[in-house]
Image 1 (tube, rainbow, N blue to C red):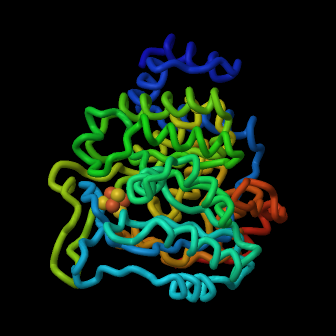
Image 2 (cartoon, rainbow, N blue to C red):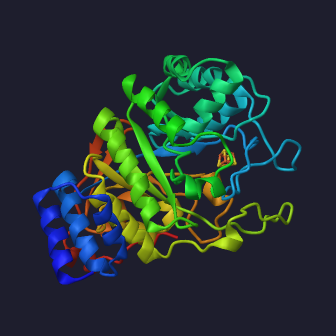
Length: 389
Ligand code: SF4
């Protein structure tokens, strides 16, 4: 990128002018990572100061049995496969109760598209979870699952959402988005939920007062222009509804040979590589710069590792999901050494050590608790830093 174009983009960012599709593609073409980080950090600081939000949450997957076979997915199993499972309602509640410690504020629940479970199962699970854990917010189901419930129940998404909200649903999850551009999507997604239905369902959720997250799966066969297109579609929907609380770029993960059956389930593996750490930082930064109307950008540390999560805080990120203990969808594909457990204290250290102020939030991004900012550099040097393994 020549110096004139750089100055033009800088001027737009510092004056708060909305960036265009061409600007987004040009930012991805830049190799000047420090410059991109500086611009994104300016926007992030304008919106969120030096605060980094996190929450205390756990992930629960009711079933890994799925009717679809998305090319990147190493989580799904077919009925009868050795490690296919489906929880009964009381088993789901018992599992959630096991996870309850440490002042849990959120359960994050996503599942396969089970071919025979009836629709009634899902609101029943939510009602019983809410009865057992009344102080825990239930962030559940992708737009893909909601469309699946339409298919198996014969109801419309509006009635489905009404019933789920009545049963305790606090938010949808942001999954099922992947990359919306059909040129890419047709090669990676096997379910029926594309942009038209994904946006229809999130719009409906926003109309009913829910705040939802939006995600993007990057680092596979897509190109930067597809990432820009993805964000701009969401930005337009956000102009209309204002219902997205956070944008979450999710790094595509390679699979490993499953020791249970010797299989690699991911069919993209031979065609692609994972995004490098530099590409991930660039994706966080450009997303922050383009997405001027969403308050938060999150790094899901499970998919990026802790070092990159700390660095991402200087590239537009102001939210680190959460104190996850078990995250099956990635950990089924993960052999990259990310820890499976992070507690509140670990997150406080991670955020403070990077020079930011930790703030615990709930599902609605309301502040639960503010913590002291980082100690001075001199003090930090006087005390050996905790290494999180
Ligand atoms: S990504 Fe979701 S819908 Fe696609 S195969 Fe995996 S579990 Fe099923």
